[in-house]
Length: 197
Image (cartoon, rainbow, N blue to C red; front, side):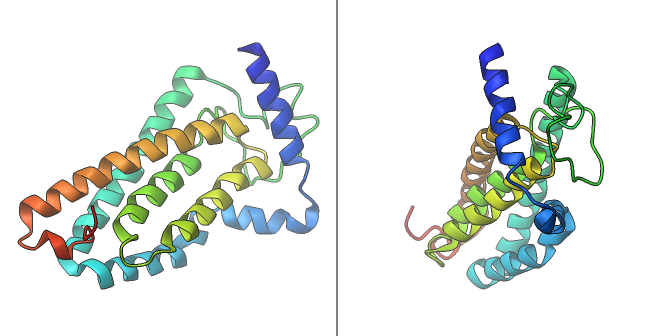
């Protein structure tokens, strides 16, 4: 375990120190949750075009559940493990580039990484039959958000990786639940995004 922690810290310092002041504002922008609003609006438009109004509203309700689940699970882990963020960890923070607006206390695991990975899987599985390249776009976006947490100095790679693993699981489970609800409560499940199960 100590070796894993040391490896995580070394990888963090390597990735974090790749940054330069010229890119700091960009990554602070990417990590801000409000920066993704235009992207979210575009995804809602895609959902509406693919699923119609009622199915889109159901999907957005499950997106709210998904974000709540990843956020609350992250808070539970953070207070259980109480692992200091790299920007608060002695022996790490002295060598790191901390460019975030603030530094919270605990960082295991990254809620940003978990929610972006969960959304990537959930929406990607729903929309893949309508836009074949949607997964690539969503993965690229989720990777940007996840790496931003390392860049600004508030999460270790292990925090991000754990967030991705749990996010993928949550996203896929909610996709299955979404599929079940559409088949159970909508007359024409074929027109609900699952033409090729």
